[in-house]
Length: 313
Image 1 (spheres, rainbow, N blue to C red):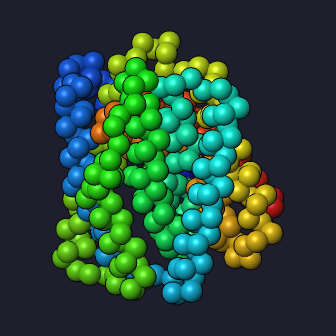
Image 2 (image 1 turned 90 degrees about the vertical axis):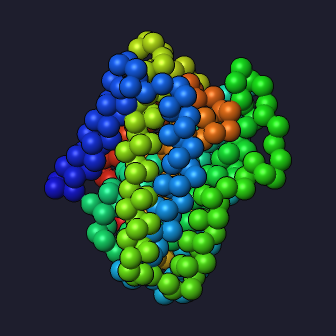
């Protein structure tokens, strides 16, 4: 019960910061140009620092074998989830201008701000070690595959011209560095690790402010989106974790790792999706709607997911 209260507290925290961003836009403290520049600051400086700092400040890492197994399972899980994204968007006959955002929503969840606290509440600190390694492919894929999804939409459904330079960024460099550092077992680096972690701490609150500011661009009646978006939201919150459980339950002997897979697969839409829309010309309106709907829905779906895991594990 205490764990569930902790989870609920994290959700309230998230909504509070989003609410501040919403209020700031209505008072013109935040403008579209400010949102774009803040997004660029996060993607170019704060988030890369956070990724590297998460490894450099880790107290300990799993064995090399566990790291490789966890990394491999994570890569396999994203093959499944990307296939599910194409299946759902195809079945919904999603119109141009929303396909990329919907695929992004299905594939990429809010692991850092919600997923890690939920794992801590359910399984304890040991789960965070696996989650950190499991999240490495996410950090790489969200800024390559995820960015590519978003460029397929663009404003008013116009596709953005994509070259290899589109995906070359400090964030990708930080992802590669984090993977190399993890595999090399380099962690607990004083000064540099603390500096990166401190700078990276800007990422979460700033991201949530941008989400709230983006929501303020929409009339209140449009916050809930369309029936297609609700289907995508249910896919992210309910179908995805159940599919992961069905596929990996007979394949993964490590129950803790299996729990990490299922929980991470059921998180609401990643908050950095809105920032990436600003960066790559994606449909920020639909992304903001999806973030809002899935975050609201997760207030019910996460406790149900916890109950499910308690019954089957």
